[in-house]
Length: 325
Image 1 (spheres, rainbow, N blue to C red):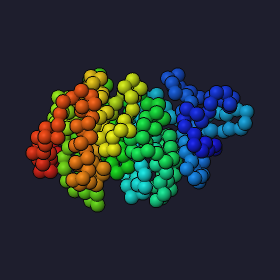
Image 2: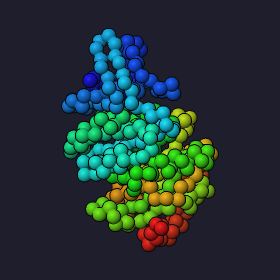
Image 3: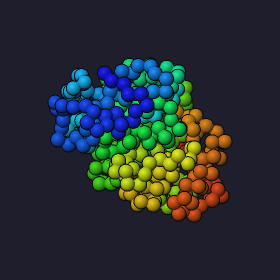
Image 4: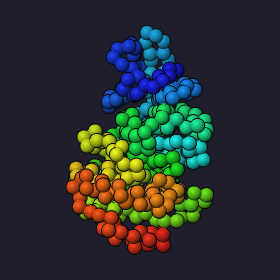
């Protein structure tokens, strides 16, 4: 197994440095290069690690790959988990992804060079992780961008390391809904739960009330349930690094408002999100979030203000009272 410190996916096998012989590749494998990257998970300061599921036998002259990345059944979906020092929660996130009954999932993990044992936990699942990147990054949205650029699925979903799916059918239901409607994107509902007792629901986030006109009031679909055709990122760009906490909101504005991408809502709770994340950790983060929402709207031609965002507060408060059916 080979390790490429400081390498990026598109540079791991530049040019014709290796004479690669592929023993099995499905006819619809477009991003073949991504299937060549493997990792020994050896310790190296500030190193990038790349791992791809599948067996590789390699010498200096040729390689043979038995690729198990693609499942010929259904559209390939890439699920991206970004993490940094997430040892307390990463296991449940990984297991919820691996439990999904959708037959064609590529799992991508982007770790921000954790120092708390997160990587030790990830190593336990190395045979079930398709792509792993571990290196310092410029923040959560930089990590998301690395994951998207590494992914080869036709559809992209992001599940952060303190979130998890509510059952094994979630990804399949999202993709079936998206395919049936013929849309560019799909989203669903989520619940925010007590970080110490994930059975205790604190807030119900209903994405069903979303429409692009409500972006000016700060409304957006629940981001961990937002699945997008990868072609949209390639056409309209990746997450902006000009935002600390609201680049996901800006992405929704860019795709669903500026680009006019089509969407469908699945009226089902798909994800449990632990309270205490960047956007749910108190008044200071809420203030910064709203400032950045105004910035994101204005950057995309939507007229709004902090005063207008305040109009959503009464409805937001009802989310703490209302429970999912």
